[in-house]
Length: 106
Image (tube, rainbow, N blue to C red; front, side, top):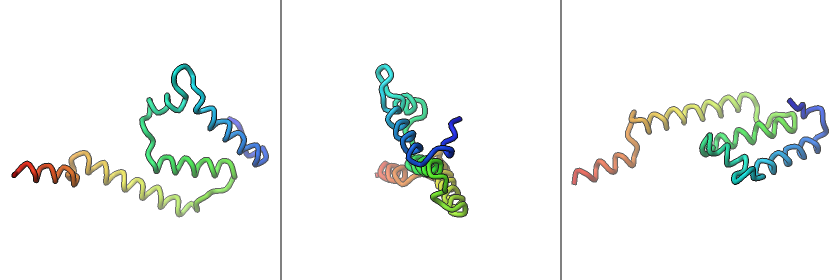
């Protein structure tokens, strides 16, 4: 693995920029980003935010968020994921489903 902390900050930023551009270079008909999207699906906003925080901390060598706040953020994301999964899997009907079932009784 490339140890980026051994290089100056501007080299780390240059490596990140080159990697970001390389992701969008087409290989055949699709770019690497399109292949990844085909395998994983669309990435959620919290996933992109956490990836950006990880990239920031990897490039600069310091954390953008205190460990206590990061644990709180991860707990909130996990709680929201459990709540939303439960509501979509039949544990509790969503508002749209309630609206559709209420209209069918007319």
